[in-house]
Each structure stands twice: as C-alpha cells, then as structure tokens.
Length: 401
Image (cartoon, rainbow, N blue to C red; front, side, top):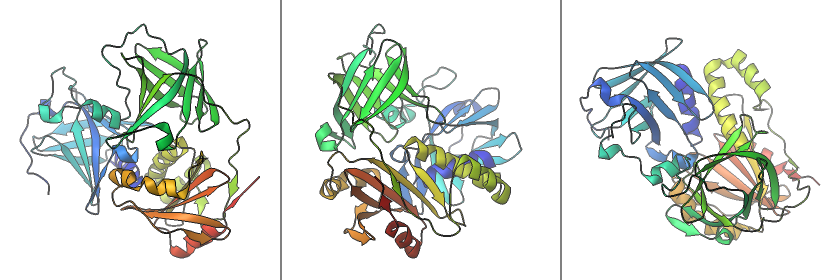
C-alpha cells in the first residue's frame, strides 16, 4: 500500500518479535495508533518525534489511515494472524498480530508498532493491556479535559503558562526557557504570545475543549486546550509535553519581531515546496513525493523549511525561534531531558563555521547544529549530509538586519 506506507516512512524519518496470537476478525475492528518505531535496532517513541498516525478498521471492511494532515482510504481483511490493508490502487500492506495485542509493520527493515485504542468501535472496552491512559492521550497530542470540568466554563480572558511537564519532570517556565500566554476574546479571536512573538488566531469551544485555530498555516493548525476542574487550562503536545496555564496578564509582545537569515545550499539541492513537490512527482514518482509531503507539513508546522539533496535521502530542515535569553550552557542543561525523548542524544563541543559558533548534537537518527545570534535560536537538522556539505552550508550562514 504505497501511499499509506509512504506516510509511515516519512513520519518515522522525523526520527525480539513475539509469536502472533490467534484472534477473530472482530478483535481488530477499531482505531489503532502508532506508538513506537524501530530503526536500525533503535526504538523511538512515536510521540517524542511528533508522529501522529491512526488506522481505523470498520466492521464492514473499510479502512482509513490518518497522519494528521491527510487521510488514505482502502479495505482490510484479517486471517487471524495477518492484517491485510489494500488501498484504492490495489497496493497491499501487511501487519502481523502479536501475542501482546499489538500489530507490527515491517517496512523495509523499519518496524512500526501499533496499539489498539482504549475503546473499540463496537463499544466494548479493549483488554487492559491495550488501554490508553491519560499519559497516552498526551503523547498523541489530544486534549484531555477533566471529567469534572464544567461544560459551561469559558476560556475568555488571558491565560499564562504556569508549568511545563516533560519526561516525568515539572519545570517552571523560566527553567524551560519559555514565556507564553494565550488571550481568548469574546468575538472568537485569540492572541498567542510565545517568547515575545505574537500570533493571531481564532478559537471555538466544545464543552471543556477549546480549539485554537491558525488559519494561516497550510493545512490549518489546531491546538486543543482542556479546561480543568481546578480552574487551570492544559495543552497536551504531540511530543508528550504538557503545558499548564492559569488566568493572568498577557506576556509582552515584541513589536515587529523579525527572524531574518540566509545560507547557501550545495549544487543539486533544492528547497521542498508545493511547487517542487510537483517536480519530484514527475522525476521520482508519487511515493517519493508523498514521503516529502508529510515531512514538509510537519516541519512547516514548526515554522521551519525543508531541503533535499539529489538522492532525496539527503535532507536538512532549518528552524528559527526567539531564544529568550537562552545560552549554550542552558541548552546543555537540557541534555538529560532531551536524551530521554531522543535516543542517543548528546551535545558535542562548540565549533566555528564562518562567522558563527554552533553547538553540535548527535542522536541515533541525525545530527543537529544550534546557533544563537542576537537572542534568536537557529537549529539545522541534517540527515545523511556529507561533512563537506555541512561545512559549506553552515559557513555561509548569516543573519540579516
């Protein structure tokens, strides 16, 4: 199933099998979520990479795979051991049922693990081994409203970030290097201020869940807040981080904040855009374009840009955000926390490229180079990039006025 498989591979790049148990067809009906990805023997938590992928199997044999930005449909069948998914073009994807109730997909040596959600589509509770806890919901980026929160509660007013929960630790905004507030206006508009940079959006409410919508993003980006019974409001992020807000005064926004920078890319490289994706379809086929389309949507949601080399296996993305006073020492202080979320994460010693000093970091999948210039943080993430190309790109980096 090429289209569905392409989305899975792309999401995994942003990063002893048990004997299969026998089961009846009804056992797999429901919604399944990707929880882990194993690459070259290294297991990566899907939530920590921002990966959001669900598979819904209906009783009538219909199937749908949703990566958060696009939905692919098809049909499914199950022989008690192997689940077969077939898309509208006839391509097939096989998943093996395991003794622990999970499904495994082996995609060219990369193993993707799926778990059944807590309640199956038939309305029956799943086995306790497959229950999704509030922590699982947080990892999937879903809003988890308190059952005691009043449906009549309103978010109108300003909410200020009070704490950040990540990898089992609770941090103050100062410790996390993050200043944030959200103001919900009665007319349905909202202002989100992050580290001095303001963004306008709209919002809507469904009971205790408040959805903030950024219409400027493509596709539209939605953040789901949850009003809690204790008077706080929480935001569960895809990477497993939980942000808790309390009523307060809005954070100050910096008027006209600009993040302007430039660098050169090697010959044969190109920036991935909607237009270049069309060119890639013509030259490399739909499968390669589908992989990059998912990666592009994920990176654009973080305000970054994506570049590829001639082989398309060589990739780089670049993200710039206000540093809010953060230094290399502050980044190093977060190394243990980052290592819990990203397998093999480790900072190196600062290196000089051109006029800029970078703090390098490596993990099991790629290499990153951090720079802080004029209180703005820049992160270059490199996958399969030659040392000479790394030096060429980073040496050309310059920050504009």
